[in-house]
Image 1 (spheres, rainbow, N blue to C red):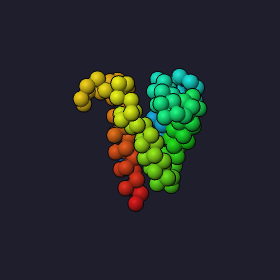
Image 2 (image 1 turned 90 degrees about the vertical axis):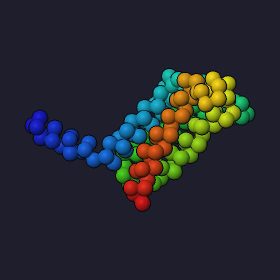
Image 3 (image 1 turned 135 degrees about the horizontal axis):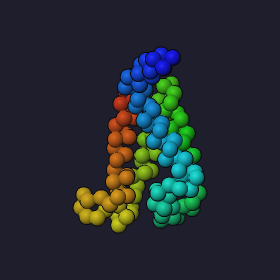
Length: 138
């Protein structure tokens, strides 16, 4: 029984597309859940960003939590990759805004990001993985 499970598991995770979908789903569901439960380290940045744009910050943290969780679940289903990709692009567009409008929070100097800036900049990897899945489906 253990060998059978092991063989099925290895077969399942040896497919790069499956691993990519699981990775994206994990990150989005996990980070979304953190926002929904009010324990995300990004909550303060989201609130400050939205308040600086004249919108209620706390409401947006909840919205982003729901959005990210749903997006993560979508990545689990191969037939939803195209939709998930475009929602991911929308999400990443929102998440890079602090790089341009909250300079003191995300930059220590020219091309020297703060910890928060690094948190945002790593999204280029998320985009690359999502894009790879998207073009595999085209």
